[in-house]
Length: 399
Ligand SMILES: [Zn+2]
Image (cartoon, rainbow, N blue to C red; front, side):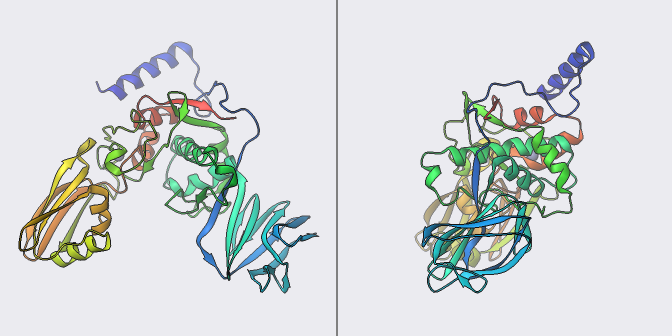
């Protein structure tokens, strides 16, 4: 009997004896780490700076105030549509140049930026002839706007709840970091942080159930030695997750929960296995783009060190007339060759190139999202899922 089956059997026994089946997820009876109001998080929308964007303010009462440059305040009632752009002096809303370089838009309901709806406030920052758009929103609403994008649309409730705890932990670490209060934004809205689309999920799922999934775990984060830790996750682990170091991620001391575990749950993922053929020229160009210049010919590629689960920690490329060896970390090799993962299982020489095979999609650290989805479908709760992928981790409340 595997560890997880044993745990499942014990849980079933406990439920039979106790007759207490939690109606909605696990019961968290925990002391708060930082009691108080739900903190806000600032999310950079759309990544790059933009020259202009369409804004709609929705509600019965709204106020726009300056936080930098000339003093500016405007109050209004009813919905407003405007083009926001960098004016000659400050941020222009519609035909008016406000003269302010930072503006806060506070709607009483929500705002729409380029047609996507968001709760909370919109902060506009003028930088030369461009504008950055930042959504300041409470962490719970942020988590609600992340989980439908980070979990597959066919996922069941426990998978969304597990994703909510992981996403909240990540968000909390960013807002509670030293100096975070003064930062213009804490996270981006794309995969370099967590994918967030406000009140409009990217997939065809309804927002209302997402509110329930987030609310049923409200305030709960993952901790290691009583401290929240970076609860990384990735799409598909290919059979075994890996340790943070192998993927060049900072475990921030949480080497226990981020050490890599077996996963038998993601075999049905369309990204479970991959293969890719690359030419010698692809290898030369890819390494050059990663500032690891080599000269042809390429004689061989070899995984020379492996981390947890067999993930490539180091790849060595033999090249040039003198048969020199260029070593690079597995994740860098992955991005140089645009591989799905650095869980590389086979490298075979072919005329003019190589055929590589591997498993998984993503960096492979922490929760395997496809695996979490399958575990939830098989009846595991969110705490069982999270304890599986972050071994030794505990749960705490932050508020
Ligand atoms: Zn997996």
